[in-house]
Image 1 (tube, one colour):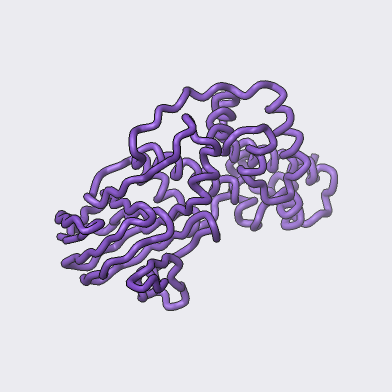
Image 2: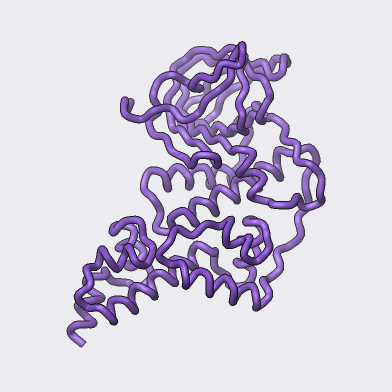
Length: 302
């Protein structure tokens, strides 16, 4: 294990002491304070006494074998197999004790109340959202894709940056609220954004391309929740919002290279909102088809 990676996920045990979920360091860890925490770890066979979380927790086993477990959820005894690719979900505040018979490798993701509230804004029908634990392993292909995408982003940050990360988080949070709540919530089909909202978004994005754009701020700008903005924008344009921002950053970079042929490419990347030169190269190649250095040479040759 990587001794330099500290645990991020914590539990409350007897007498409300707050301790790491597991004391051994995870293989990888990440997250954003107040929104989510992530750990990829291998856990040896063992047990945990009764504990609770102050956030909702997803566990996705990614090993190769099924492992027998015995748990008590709010005092109710449950037995089964921790199976690769099958989730266990524990709602915030529920009490769990559990034991497992062999090592388990898994992805652990916590979703804070702040993130859940941020994602939908005002609830679809105005009722309070109550989530229900489901620790019996179950398959959810959409949720598995989202959790693995978050893990991949933390391992090698996506060129879409925080906007891409937050889009994944919002989609994950909404999926959890839809599938683990008391009573399924029906959602309306996404409606395209009216033109004035599209114009306001475009003007704001162009004025702040060099900054870290936040889905929450963009949603507040047009009076929608982050989730409904993401859906409506895609219904309007066919693109995700983070894709549109990335394309605008690449176009801005092309204009800047035309205007300032001596400006270092790393400076171009920074001014257009890329957090690293590597992200800039990857995005530029994807949207333009050549490396930034090759593009600049073609400008100078022309």
